[in-house]
Each structure stands twice: as C-alpha cells, then as structure tokens.
Image (cartoon, rainbow, N blue to C red; front, top):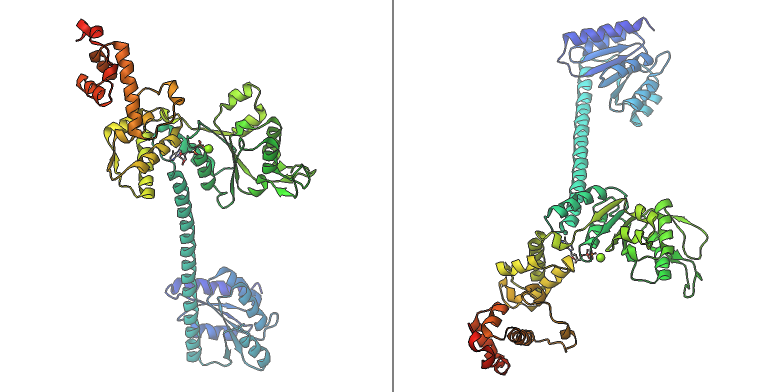
Length: 508
Ligand SMILES: Nc1ncnc2c1ncn2[C@@H]1O[C@H](COP(=O)(O)OP(=O)(O)O)[C@@H](O)[C@H]1O
Ligand SMILES: [Mg+2]
C-alpha cells in the first residue's frame, strides 16, 4: 500500500501545476491500475483527478484534498465500494458519490442508490463521453447545493446578526428609556448616571440615599430595568410602612400558625423577587431583629420564613434606600454597622434639588409637558420672572415638590400660554414672608384673591404700625407710595392708618 501513495501524490502535484483552472477535484478509487488510468484519462481534462487503490487510501486523500466527487469501484479487496462510499457520506456528506460496477452485486447497489447513499452508478465498461456528461451534471447539482448552502448560511448569519443587533438595540432603548425618565444635566446627576450605568450590569447591593423626593425610587427602578434581571420581578417594600412582625412576614414569609392571624403559609417578597430585585425603601426605619435577618440574606442568600425551621436559598439583588444619614444612625447605635457596610457596597447619594438648581428648568419643562398632555393645557413655558422664582425656591420636598407645583399650576391654568409669577404658589413666589404662626389657627381661606388680600391687609397694617408713616411703610413693603395709598383705600384700611399727628413733620 505504501508504494501507492507517492503515485497519487505525484498525480496531485502534476494536476495542480498544469491545470489551475480546473475547479473540481475528483477522486477515483479502484484496485485495478488499468481502470484508474483509464478513468483519469477520461476526466483529467476537466477535473483535477486523484486516484486511490483502496478505500483507506481514498479516505486519506479526502482528508487532505478538496474533493467534490468520488467514483468508487464496488468490489475491492479490503473495503467494499458501498462501505467506502458510506464512510464518505458520513464524513463528507456534500461529496457526490458514484459507484463503478461491472457485474452483479446489483442488489446492494440498488439499495445503496435507493437509500440515497450514492448519487448514481457507472456501468463497466463505460462510454467516456457519457461518463463525462454524468460527472458534469452531478457537479452542477453539487455546485447548486453548495451555493444554496452558502446562501442559506449567509442568510442565517445575517439573521442571527440582525437578531443580536435588535436585542442589543432593544436593550439600549430599554435602558435609555429608564434612564431617560431621570431628568437632569447637572454634574451631580451625571455622576449618578455613570455609577448607575456601571452598577446596573452587576448584582452589587446598592444603597440609594437622599432627602425625600430626590428620586430614590426612580433610580432603584432604573438600575433594575437596565440590568440583566429586567425580565424578573422588581419588588418594592417600604420598611416604614408596616409594624415589625408584619414587615418580617411580608419580606420573609411565614408558615401557617407562625403568629395569630397566620392562617396559611405565605411566600415572602424575597421569594417573590427570586431572580430579580427587591427594593427596601426607608431601610433606616427597620428594627434590630429585622436588621439581623436582612444581614443573613445579604451574607448567605438565605431566608427563613417565620415559624419555619428550614432556610431557603434565594437569588435576589438588594437595593435599599434611605433619607436618613445611615452613618449617623450607626454611630447612634440605631443601625447595625455590619448591615450598613453590606448595604453600601455601592452608594448612590442623590443631592437635594437646591444643590443642583441647574436641573430645575429642565425638570420644570418636563413636568409642564407632561401636565399639558394629561390635562390638555397649552402652556408652552415660563416667564423669566416665574422661572427665576422656581430656580430660587429652596424645594424642601425636592423634585416631588416641584412636580406637584407644576401639576397644580397646570390644573389651575386656563388658556394661558406661559406660566407667570402670579400662577406660582405663594410659597414659591416667595416675595411674601413665611406666614406668621397665627395663620395656622385661622380658618383656611380657599379663595386665593381674598386670602391674598387678607395677607396684604395684615402686612400693610403691620408696616404702618412699625413705621408710623405711609412713605416708610411703602418702602418697607417694597411698593410705591401711591400703590400703598390705593391698596389702603381698596382694602378699607383708612381707619387703620396712623393719625396725622403721629406722622406730622416726619413725613417725607
Ligand atoms: N431626576 C428626575 N427626573 C424626573 N423625575 C424625577 C426625578 N427625580 C424625581 N422625580 C420624580 O419625583 C417624584 C419623587 O421621586 P421618588 O423617586 O419617589 O423620590 P424618593 O423616593 O427619593 O422620595 C417622582 O414622581 C419621580 O418620578
Ligand atoms: Mg421613595
């Protein structure tokens, strides 16, 4: 056998050197040298012909060379043609298989053809022209199949790429849409976005801190929905909303009979949120015993329902929020230090609105657009004076207070196009000092104009008393003397003004 290998190699080299234009490799396998030579002669003009004296040799050539078509003799000493072609089919299913057959193993031949194991058979002796034609047709179908396959492959790849791109884009859009709900361009908020973006992709526990109304909820949700857990639940629980035992059973679940009123087993939120995220709002309000339980979940990923002796594994990401200074709570002994450190693996501190006033115009417009839509108003914006007041206000209730302010303006608006100072609430307008304490005791005045008049009247009277002089009172009130005079008249305060004698020669 070893002696034969150089022979076929020689043919290969020769074929390559002389006929680079022949695209297809054809392998001929026969144990009779004469037949190999004859077939090679028949085909070598159009194809790169390789010859092998046995099935094993043929397989070795197939291993090395690009072969499109195999012609094999049926009866050979070691491996029969059917066996050889069967092996070819297994390893190179695309290679076209032809059987050379001179005599009567017709039964196995027909079976092989019927079962699709060979393409066609070539009778011995063959007519060279006919053989060439058959090989040509076979290769045409081979080529067609190959191109189809290549196209289908390209199509599949393109589809896959498209799907991946779609998924990526959808994720981007989803993430953007959640991040987009958070309005703000201040450097402080940009830093918050950066941290959120990084932390969203991880399972890290996050502590969101900030005064009430700074957007802690919004941030927690955005982190969840921008991350890989987005398809799983986001479960929120306000820890200040429930008494201790109820909260514990809410979070960890309970077994039937664990306490009075526990009529049936109940799944806790940690289990409900399995695979997702649990948002523990106002974590600073939790009792020490609950803090121990929370620590356990964070450390071991285990929960134990009330009244149960068994623990369960849960896979839950924890995001906690607080409007307290937790560090100070720790120092005061009201919050476990170990839990504090577990929670603040990543801390996102949301600055109060008054420390990022540059976000106020954006937010105000955002809320105005939304209110317009909701209430069918046509408010296009704010007068400069009104915006100045919005920016100057201290917003102790932060973004939530601003949101409410704009909603209120839109609700009370008529067909105005711009929000003017007079449409702002009194606290925001801010010209007026904080109402004196005694207003609390008085019945609330709901008619805005009358309430304003009442306040004006009181302030005018106070100013007059304090200065004893209309000019100085006007100055103190920040209005022209004539306006004060008119108001005194309109509000019926004439009797209250200081007497002539008192003002006498001091009037200026
Ligand atoms: N940066 C922001 N952009 C848009 N809306 C915000 C922003 N921050 C807060 N809000 C809105 O203000 C309100 C209060 O936010 P929330 O997340 O509930 O605050 P917190 O949980 O800190 O009290 C919500 O209606 C929220 O949608
Ligand atoms: Mg909140």
